[in-house]
Length: 309
Image (cartoon, rainbow, N blue to C red; front, side, top):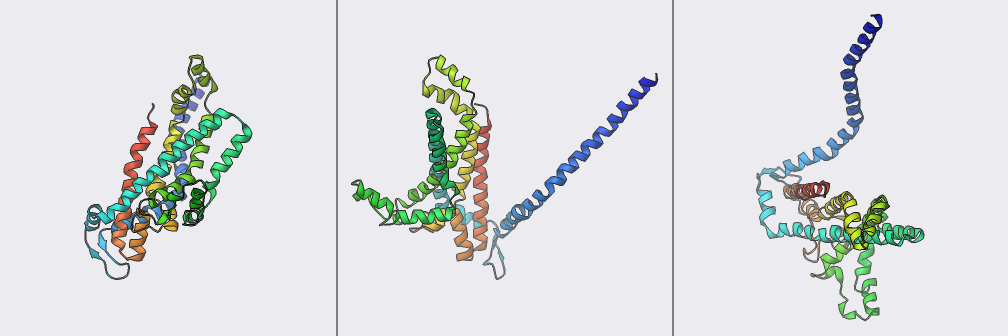
């Protein structure tokens, strides 16, 4: 009887202390997260709230501000001059997202098929090298190569395509694609390395089963590789799409938004409006619109790639 009472007492004590211990764990978790949350609130949430506030005013940053309500947003969404940077940013998604992810997947699959450790190591190093170069330095370097007497035009002359030479970054038709290809060059290595790592985790037995069923490399890719790296592709699409919509460094160091406004993107336009024309309200409104555009594009993409195929 004493043993029974002793057991009941221990069980009751455990029941009483369980919620208390869980409460302590929750409190400890919040305590550890507090520094990051404070930094996030100071450098993300607070500036966002201030930008929303400024976007409702006409203000030059010095004198008194004038309440204009949603006029700044109306200006951005109705004036062709303000819509052009947003259109250009969506064009850059092709070069920052579609091309790098496609090329990265193809290169990762090729490296996996070759199965040569020396080749794989050299390929990873060479492809990832642009990723560690600062974007400002990459932009300056490519500006030299795209110049009239630069490496690109010299290479075209050597192979007999001299008729195609042009000042690429000063051409109204080719400036935006030329800048976009810089983004492709920078991001392809990241896509290749991440996808190669994901492919390396796939069970070889899955490929063997496809081959036993009479499948070739295409069937292996479609039935095994592509579904297995779905989430990694989603991560890359998310990162690269944000990079395209929020691009600044490469554009600023190569064209500054020119020629004319052919390569103007929201990031550079915000800088120009805020620090060049002193249109703080309009610049803030464009920043808020850019944030909403990023969310409107990224959230559906995230949902699509997280769903099971």
